[in-house]
Amino acid sequence: MGIILQVNNITKKYGGLIAVNDLSFHMEEGEIVGLIGPNGAGKTTVFGCISGFSPPEAGSIKFFDHDITRLSPYRIAQIGIARTFQIVKPLRHMSVLDNISVGAMALNSNVNLAKKKALKLAQFGGLINKADMPAELLTLSDKKRLEILRCLAMNPKLLLLDETMAGLNPIERQEALYFIKSIKASMNVTILMIEHIMDIVMPISNRVVVLEYGTKIAEGSPNEISKDQTVIKAYLGESYHAAN
Image (cartoon, rainbow, N blue to C red; front, side, top):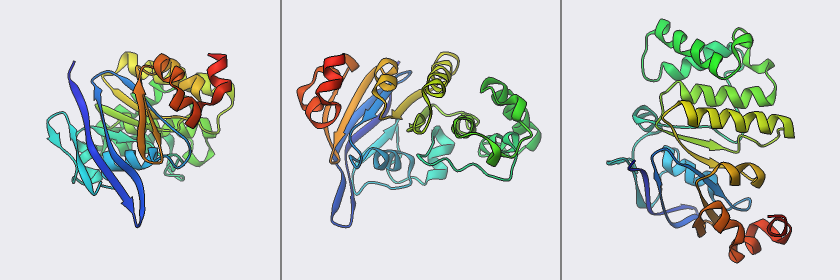
């Protein structure tokens, strides 16, 4: 396994605000890496930099051997990086199956092939019985799952998951966790995930990167991060530390 993603000293500004400050980290193929930190720490901005929606002003991003720092979101998606968003935005009036097909057609304009792939993914994701349902009628949990399936239809090598557990009840969280584990087990996909629910992100992650005010304050295994005094003070809190 080699390095799939290399983020090198990226900085992203919005006016006078530094949203991401000189950030560096890498990912190995097959890893799940958690990206955590307080609200406003710059986590989603990092996703924007990687996926091409908000290119950094400084630094570089490499995907395998390709410099993707200035590529368009469409081109980055084509070469193997797909992302979800904090607020799910399905194509509301289209069916579940057609929503997934849209992802597949980013790589191949053949409608029949796209629908065949979409059917397989709907089965894999547990939405086959809702394949003909308009996406707007799905529960929040199913909408989040649909967004992931639409990403998977693009055959990504790197999947960026932005708070896929937010708004879910404990049972739905466990189902979502099992779904992510099944993606890791059955598909050749590396995952970078933003998550606030530590009981989810810590057990599933190989490594964790912690941001505060756009700056990386720690990186390491979940066990190392849970004991890091800087992280405890900035984000986790003593109650989490005591319980773990």
